[in-house]
Image (cartoon, rainbow, N blue to C red; front, side, top):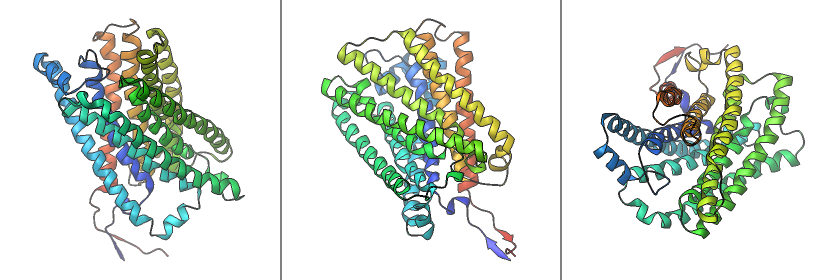
Length: 404
């Protein structure tokens, strides 16, 4: 008899960085309340002063929304940072093991891209925290944009070096890439990481008033954004071919929906770029064009969500890995699509339908559609808390029979 008291997370995988990513994404979903419900005239995003004024002058619904948003941002940002720190410590220990050497010589080498992906999300979360909790931050915001560009550019270099190690190995040494194990969208993780860098680089384009800063933001975010698109197309086509031949890898089933967060992130990048082109270079785009652009992205997202749900239900993934006793670090990939859908719906409703005059702001149709976004958000909150208990909760002491 052997005594087993280890948690699933003690058998480390770089995919546990997705736990940090999911928490950071949930912080963003709460910021959407402030982004679209709190007035912020003259600024593209709400600041501490805007939020304080809305709380002081608003009614009970506004005050309740602000309290929920602020508490949600604080809680999930703390969880995001805590998980990121734990992951870097666990990764450092993991690098000293034989399992790490095996990972570096397998298809799973690309899971290392989860580290820059989660780090980029944490930087975004920290920026949100600054806007919400730091008074007069907007007075010095122009000094922060160059630092943000440097930080995200550094993450981009890190991501490209990791991708280069992987592609350099598999494209120069024949037979080292297992095509039969390419039967999922797991290889789209590098594209997701690059797209997260791209949206971070695009932030100054939407918020800066300095032409040089906006120009650098536009060029750098375009480079990383289209690099992400190129990688997505190539990896998705080859993976789909493998899935048609070998079926979808059961533990990697959630990756079928990774297209959803990639499109949300790239969609926000393009909207940030459009805003920068308008404010700094006089380019115009109508609200109707924005609505149709977001509708196209949302359509593709829904299609991949439906595809993913069909496969996961047929494989019994939720029964075993979410509500059952089995665990897989890849389960955290389920959080990203739900979070991304919630954020995309908020943009589609507010920047698309409301801005174009299709529905009225805060009317019945508005709250029915917003209710879908909120339902997706709270479902992902429940999923994150459930997965954290499964993977990081104190493991019960149990006896196991030795393998025969």
